[in-house]
Length: 184
Image 1: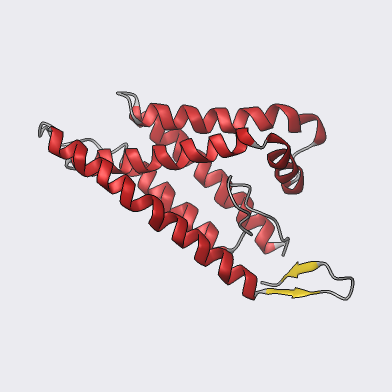
Image 2: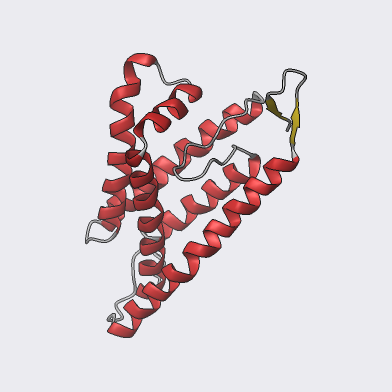
């Protein structure tokens, strides 16, 4: 027996995930050189850096667009796959105590276990989009709730990321050479 969700829940999840991926893609495209540096730090081979600086944001934009169309299931799977890959890469680097910026787009955000957990929670949100919807018709008021949800979630998400930045700031210390290093 398949579970269905109210269309409002599915559309809220779709809009939030699309907003996240749209912002991430545009931030990466806006500063491709910085994104290329992030990719190099993550260990992407030099020969693949150029294509990858275009491919990842293109996949993120594709996911964002698909999430808002009748092909939202494909967008959900693409978004979930990307979030899973990002979480695995961050976890691998954290296990090896490497101090990297997440490369998520926007202000610098050091990778941490909380960031890995955040990506896994976002993966769950993305997968909600693929759950079948109940047959209830969606009205204008539903779309107003979706829009209000995005307007509320964006500053909350930004605040959460700021807390992560602040938490990471407490884990830094100065090395004798004056460079910043991260502890676990």
